[in-house]
Image (cartoon, rainbow, N blue to C red; front, side, top):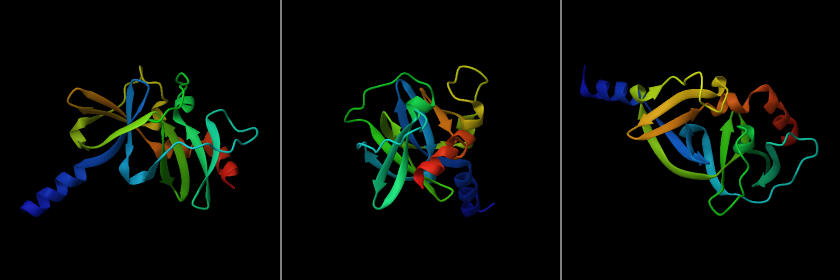
Length: 162
């Protein structure tokens, strides 16, 4: 196998993730789904929306639903501060903002560093997880943001965004 072919195989096995925090836990989403990261700004509340949908924001002329992942994951509420950010993701031609406590970095994980999620001890339903990323002393919960944001309960986001 040529060096170029080996590099291609190696690249196929690695994925880049945007790492963010909710409380003391570190989570990560596929960097390819991320459109931009912005500071949290006030949103327009939507009547009858689930609690985890904070409302909508106008992002350069596009009305974007804003989802608080802390509330979605049933974690304790936290006061928003200057570290609170919105990760704008693009999923199946839908733009959604997700509120997180803070973004820390971008990490590359090799295939062997990604383990299946355990059946217990994780605050999310397994359907929303790609697994756990193990990097030295850090354990990252790999969120499948596409499955999370296209689940049935998120169908309301479609209605909110229209």
